[in-house]
Amino acid sequence: MNETIVVKQSGKGVFLVICIILGMTLLSVFLLFADLMESPFPQIVLRVFAAFSILLYTFCSIFFIKKTLSGKPLLTVTADGILENSTVLSFGFIPWSDIEFIYLGSMMNNVFIEVLLKNQEAYIEKLSGVKKWLARWNLKLGHQPISISLSPSDVSPQDLIGELQRRHMAAQ
Image 1 (cartoon, rainbow, N blue to C red):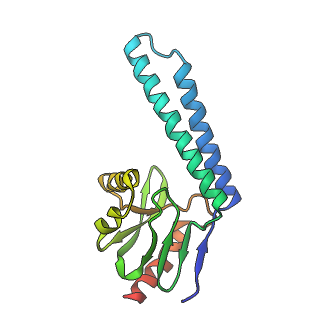
Image 2 (cartoon, one colour; image 1 turned 30 degrees about the vertical axis):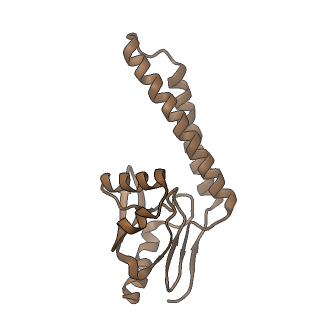
Image 3 (cartoon, rainbow, N blue to C red; image 1 turned 180 degrees about the horizontal axis):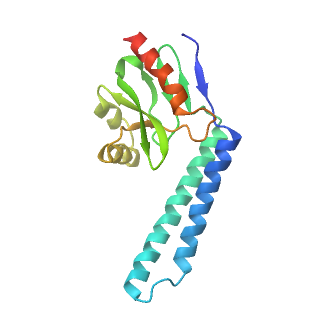
């Protein structure tokens, strides 16, 4: 029960995420230069969207490459709490005593672990500008600021959720 669980990125998971990012970037480049609309206004809107998408996927690529090269685990679970490093928000260490509830969430067929904090506003306030905005955006989308994605690993959220909930209950 007190054994530390460490979830690291897998080569297969990293390859999959890189393929998705590359595919979306190529699609955005295609949309930027393709003449798909006869009317100029929709074409301009499409190009603005494509340019924004290219910037977004470039940011995602840089973030993902940095995270991969850092070698940090996506998630570390100890007897004292969890160390979350799976997303751009990376809340860091969260003691079990600060966690209200842990459950599975999903968006567009991507399942992730959501962590409801007892005082999430205190954790959000510790974040910098863009990260703070992203955490609040998660809330507006109906998800928790701490949504742990295990996509780049060989561990499924469904396999891990039970152990997280048991450890949380034991710490209460």
